[in-house]
Image (cartoon, rainbow, N blue to C red; front, top):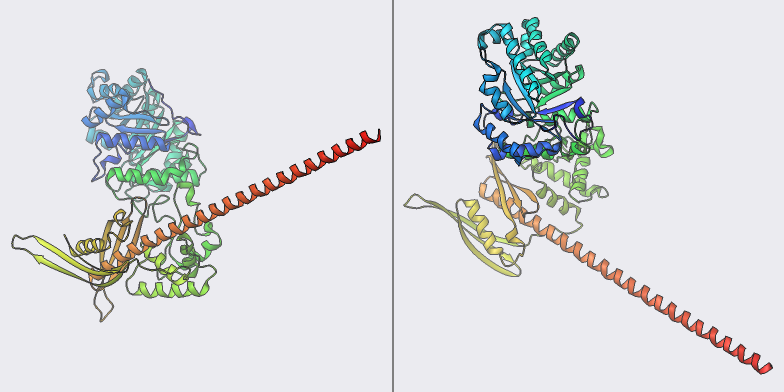
Length: 591
């Protein structure tokens, strides 16, 4: 039998960070994990360092049964976590040894089993349709049987908080039955997600005092308090907390693993993850979102892209003095980064900080910074947005700083786009561009599945052969937003273009009443930005070569000096030798 305790975590078995993404998290609408997905999720969670991974419900779900079988056959090796099988107690009126679902839990070969048991008398009598004595017997029989078979057992007391509020004696009888039968942890579940932190803490503390059991907590997020409720339970004495990645789960979801872990590590000082693994929280959150095929929540606490993003100029002024004045922790603790957003709300400090991040030094150029700020505010008032368009912002700042002129690698003479609806129903766009590049006037025409696609294809055709890096640049994403105009003016279109060269991505923006012109602006900025980065790289290479040449010259000079010194030493030695010979000759003559 495999180990039943976490490995490599500072707190060991004293505190359990328990993940149920593969079972409870998979109940979220829109999530359907394949078996390959389940293995990928488990490996990421284990690499992060969680203590327990609930893999699913073998016997009830064929996919989960196969997952456990393949895991037991050697397809899953866990360094930190323990694999857990989830299931229910024996059915009413059936011997535990004859219950096929209980047998499936043993057949899964999981070293730890979590059983769900109803602890609210209303659910016992109305849903299970048994009396409290039988419900307790179902718990007692199943726990003792699994323990006798060498399994470590946890019990999820379903609907505990509602049941305890309605009939505390019954709720306590159920969990006492679990503890007396050998369950290591009794998990108090806020199954309906309707609790608030103070109530959770009071109940956990009271139950711990009355029973002496080791308690865990499982919270749904129907009040938006799952994380707060989980932390309150821990502070009240729970030493086992159940979560899901990114808060996935049915209805409003579950307690978010990454936010709970962030709070435990950064706020309560509890080392619930192996050394250095807290810095992997952000990366793991995003990786698991990709597997679930759900866009990461940019505003997710701790690990969201905007978790440490600052927009107001007042914030940025303070951050310039000390980042922790407006960051509740150092973002690096959880593997995240601080960002400064430049908008119409920004002040000069914001712009200087953002410029530094983009490699444009404005700190010693107050006039350039003030001029750039005025332009940003004026453009934002017209519908431009630089929050998500760092590349366009960098071009603007570089143009104002004027250290190195920002020049496009081509000059537009004109472009034209036409739309053709053919007799067979096919709709084709055709674009023609006339540009000057490399001292030549080039005309190119291309078709596309839309006006922007056709325009991009024609521009590339015109520039191909003149820009060696062009084929490496791809259009990765394209977003359009129609902005209502001011009273008396027409609406304008804002286009965001995300480009990639396989190594990095960058975003540019264009705004115009015409969507094609707005797109052209963003497309051109994307190529200008890439050209600028290529020039910077070439300049860096040249500087490195010059430095290498200078170093080689210095080495040569040093070697020459060494040679001269050696020659001088040789001459001096020869002179000394000659002198000694002369003295010897004089001495012989005098004798």
